[in-house]
Image (cartoon, rainbow, N blue to C red; front, side):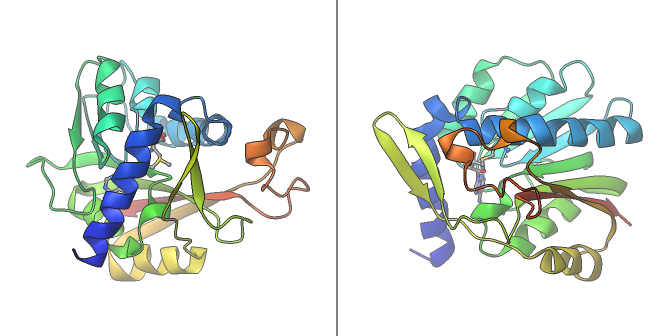
Length: 229
Ligand SMILES: C[S@@+](CC[C@H](N)C(=O)[O-])C[C@H]1O[C@@H](n2cnc3c(N)ncnc32)[C@H](O)[C@@H]1O
């Protein structure tokens, strides 16, 4: 087994085990509360009814926020249980596929936008994710990637399962590395980097979220918005 196939099977196993609890996980709700409005706002300013590819789509929560405003949505995820949860939402114009988001594009048609929300933290070689996004975009298309901030005080993702937790391999990427990959290595123009920081006790009150710097000085996440040029 190669290092990258061992990594993906670790990710698969952990998310398969956690899928039933995933949408109730406080860390997840925190991210969605803070991140989804930014992503939605950015996309709706740029497009009326975009086609969207979601790399590491999980349970399809992001697609659910876009219902009625998309022309086509494809979500890819390594975990068959996460994909099953996404399909259960029965959303029109959406297709959810089990597979490696770092593999070859599965769709012949390019997309207006590619999003990858909190999946980069499971990629050791994040350049492959950026490359996959670039090759799936129309010229002028948008890539929106969110990631755990490298400075954020945690080293591994521990997902909730029925009786306890399961660890998933986690990798951090410095913002300078992401900016270089996007702009110099893969032909994007980096339009914005947004930082997510604690915003009052609502963000840090649950045990799962106490790793966040409550003073708001240290970001816990970043969102990169880049355009294919
Ligand atoms: C933290 S979850 C985020 C899920 C979703 N984007 C959301 O907003 O809820 C990360 C997801 O990325 C998926 N993932 C990680 N590495 C992957 C890979 N190489 N190929 C496909 N999916 C992957 C995991 O299975 C998991 O569902």
